[in-house]
Image (cartoon, rainbow, N blue to C red; front, top):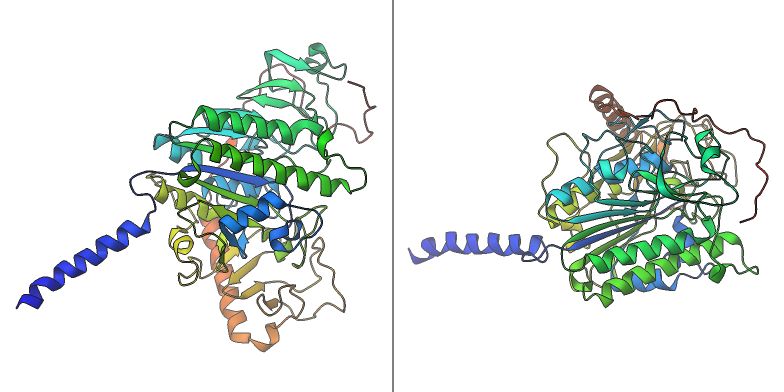
Length: 489
């Protein structure tokens, strides 16, 4: 009799204990910093085995936090990847192009719910410092997407200025450029603006200082907002081409990609130091990852590079750091993805998930117990390019090897003639031995998964937003390929 009365109480106590452990810091929500590198490969960092370049700050971050070995992004190039991170959705669901340009007419619809929207509604101060690339005009700029402030280059640093961007009254013009020239439609490839909120405040950007200046703006935000919950999104311009570094990192004895990676590593160290100095280390979650595989650097030991759906194009060097909550030196070998960041932060930060469908899953159980919790993705499907499916240790491609050009995918020996591809990513991390012929039932199942995913996305697409151009301005056409003459500062 006594036992029967106690049992429900014991069950209730156990449930409450599990709940209290499911969300760390239940009494206090963490600050959030996302550091998103451009074109950094899996093999560009010391914590994944690189010896050149040197990345001591990232390696220390790995020792103090959790390394993800199988973390995927939502696209093998810029805009699609950023869409997936910010919204928790596959970019095709939102009808977003894989890459936007200054002459694009569309961008991320402001009706879509971003991480910044969720955290701002939950009482966070929000800032974006760096490369946006989800629409360079209203209503698609960061300040239209949940961010209180923005400072940075609105797209890739190899692009050009759109004359429709509003020029600020206090714009700083460099290299002999005048306001009249800009209003008349001046533009040149690799010559890009810096925006503050929705206005151009500097043109052209001095790209040799951009990593340092992003870092300074990020640290200033951390210091200013240290007395309230904050979300800082720091998407670096580097290490995208054209590469540039500040004088302190311009070592002529090293390749420029090495210098650029080492300056990004320095930036990470500066941000973590600022968090420590503000006494916020035990109440701040920092995520470090990249938007896609290496363009110039190394994605080894993975196959493929930027733009490829082999792992070298979409499986990224990833860390999470939260001293006192995330176990130091821990490793997660389960499949996780950038689409999972939004629902995970909603859980941790007392945010409300969007009413509309998203694709991401809450990673918090996996972060709390990486050795025992399973991946939230039985199947992780990407429609980018020719498409792929990751399921457990298996990676499936519904197309014949060599039939679709994949950057950096060359390997020794002839391509398989089998009509699809299947690799064991644990036994064969470089995806060199096609096992599709040995596992016909698995191939059939994964093909059905892929086909079903495509059908569902295509039937439930949501629209982009049309960019609002100022009237009577020059068109944003791509500049002529002939390189503009270099001007001195």
